[in-house]
Each structure stands twice: as structure tokens, then as C-alpha cells.
Length: 77
Image (cartoon, rainbow, N blue to C red; front, side, top):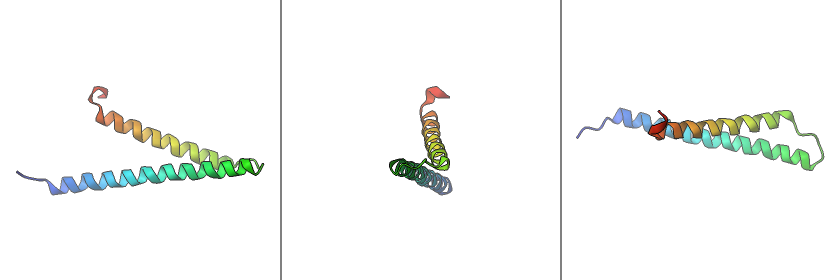
């Protein structure tokens, strides 16, 4: 039996980077939504940048999840 260690390492590295990256992206979105909620609680107008950042982060997370499902489910190919 032959194991392609370079291929295994590449898959492990890519999955680690994307897993951590997706978690960081979601955390940035939650932080931006939290800043927006604090601004609303303090009766200040929320910064449009916080709303835009949160929306983009959550949209990117949703796109990554949908792409992962596309790769996993063979009927979608």
C-alpha cells in the first residue's frame, strides 16, 4: 500500500486553513453585528460599515457552506 504523503499534507493544510478562515469570518460578522446592536441600544445610528461587513461575512459563510455541499453531494455535479 502506498500513501501519497504530499497529497495528504496538502489536503490537511487546505482543510485547516479553510476551517479556521470560515470560523474567523463568522466571528468578524458576529462582532460587526454586536457593534451595530450596541449602537442601536445607545440610540445612535448604526454605522453602515458594520452592517455591510456583517452582511458580507455572513454571505461569504453561506456561500462556503453551499459550495461544500455542492462538492459533497454527487447529484449536484
